[in-house]
Length: 59
Image (cartoon, rainbow, N blue to C red; front, side):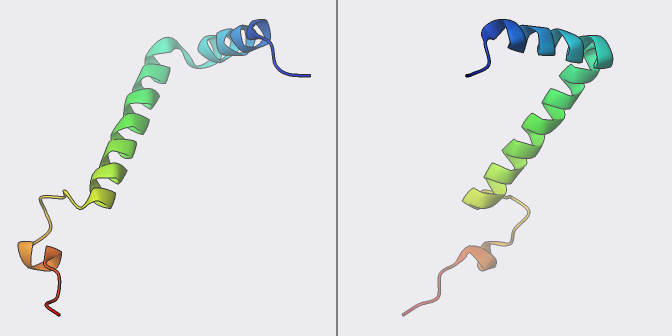
């Protein structure tokens, strides 16, 4: 017994009525920025890090 598309649409409509589309848009962009920042920090592409901290030790 799963969730049908109609049930999802009703929940989405209620959420939009409660919070408003502008507030949801801001929330979505904030979450997207947080995910982007997290991915950049995980890949090591952060320009704020010093080049010395990215070097591998010689073996």
